[in-house]
Each structure stands twice: as C-alpha cells, then as structure tokens.
Length: 127
Image (cartoon, rainbow, N blue to C red; front, side, top):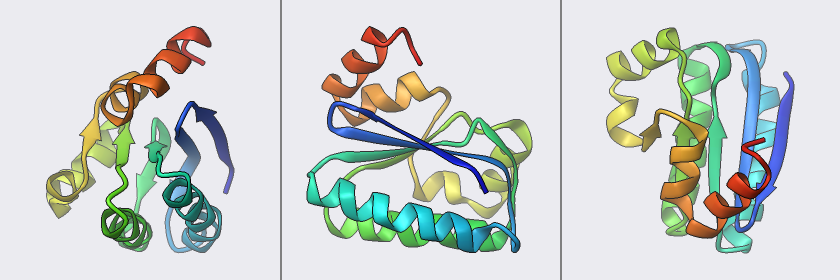
C-alpha cells in the first residue's frame, strides 16, 4: 500500500491509494499509527485524504476506527476527505460517516482542522 504523507502547518495529511482491504489493512495500520502518535504529540490534526482509495473493506474501517478512537481520546481532530462514490457509499451504509467527520475536499478538511493548515495548503498552490 502506498501512502503519501504531507505536512501543512500543524496538520498531517496521509493519502493512501488504491484498495484498503484484508491484504493492505495491516500496512495501512503500520503506516497510520505512527502518524496518529505524531499528531497527538504535536497537538495537531490528522487528515486522511481518501480521494485515491477505490474501495474499503470492514478490516480497513476497523483500522480507521482505531485511529479515530486514539485521536478522540487525545482530543485531537481526525478528519476524512475526498471519498470516492463507492467509498462514500460504504461509509454511509456502515454509518461511519456519522462517527468520523467527512469533508468533500482536502481543502475543506484542512479548513476544519486548522486555519494555519488551510493557509499553508493554499500557499502551496493546493498541492
């Protein structure tokens, strides 16, 4: 599983690609949990940009739930952004869209996470 990581001010953006299923969930968890720890230690936010994720299984949802619980316990925001239609439908059916904040775009998620993160994102030309 490929996961691109970027930093915008006090917010880390992790962008996994392709499918999150039983084959890739362990790799996602191994990559995501250190980012959760880093965000908590920095008192920042974590945004998961799921715009390149084509599918997510229940095992993948479990990984996201663990990360969300850890962030919630530390009172640090974890937001999801850019869900493709299939992934958005899975989130809706499983009601994960009621448990985790979902934003239509990465820019919207960064704006909700931190004004400094949004400014840094816009200054980078939205990349």
